[in-house]
Image 1 (spheres, rainbow, N blue to C red):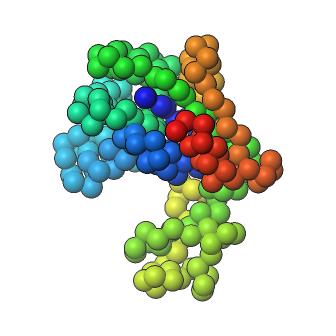
Image 2: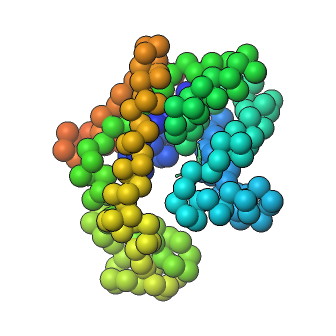
Length: 218
Ligand code: AMP
């Protein structure tokens, strides 16, 4: 089975995707994680991708498709199937993914959209904090450090990432929503889209979404 998991930054799709993939025995593939791994290892691909990522832009399709096709062609995906996170992000990528999967005799079986209210996404992301030294994550509302601004684990400074500040978050979400509709329609028109609403406003946590998906898909 091939699943794509869609949703804005802060929707919880990363956490839900990893857990559901684990329970269903699917290989979890995140294009963002592959780029970050390459950047950490200072590969040529990582260096090239990083110029776009640092500027807050999408990495060109030529490069992104190359890393994804490379990952999809490995034996484990053919054996177990995959949960794809971070791709497709544009209409063209929807068609590119269909073509890549056709290459390995597969298709998208299901697209899951994690739908969280816009204001809640803003609040979830803007309350995020991170330790500058050890990268431990905090949240000013749900999980603040014991001493404000000081990491519980290493004593380093706990700060807000620049791209988690409200203006930057709104910009990122605007880019996401500008493309989201066509991507969702691509799957909806074939009856492959499953929308999962979540968030405090409707009283449904990511954990509940995860449990429902596992129950229905296992
Ligand atoms: P993410 O962790 O999914 O937000 O990905 C981090 C960054 O990697 C994004 O901001 C993009 O620059 C790049 N990236 C990840 N997936 C894609 C994609 N499907 N197309 C283009 N760029 C991508």
